[in-house]
Length: 210
Image (tube, rainbow, N blue to C red; front, top):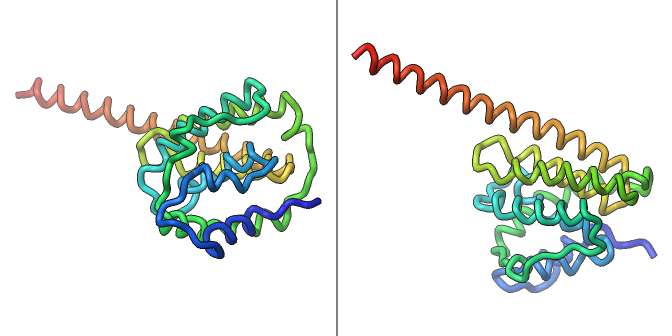
């Protein structure tokens, strides 16, 4: 039996059913069923991947994504999350704003998604590569510098969506975005370090002239 689309599940959960003012991450994860790996990467990267203000999410969610990616690399059958993370509460209104923005994008991807290139998502080597690259992206997400988390989060989101839909082509597209994202993050960090070094040299020269 075909599974319900993620966009439909999120629409029902957040907008068609009564909810408390806060929702637990564990309740959202209950929507995943057997698609848990891809679902986790999609949901946890979502706040950082969208052009919606979601302050404070990138670093803690980056840590969670890193934890999941390592488990994928070592071949865990089912993901494990600390109870504290599972009990993490999100403000319903903020979550609804994020999901409302995400649903149209999800539906666009769902329209072209289909099972293909299964060796990318289902094979052991494929999952090791996916997990390793997502782990690198999560490190970039943790850096509290503008420009170092959005594109990596988008890469994780698209890659995770490919896992969710068993679509290796979408996961490969996500990995390309990840490579671009890490290149951008490295460029930003180098620019900051280089700029900082130049500033230190200027200060030393100024002091020397005095």
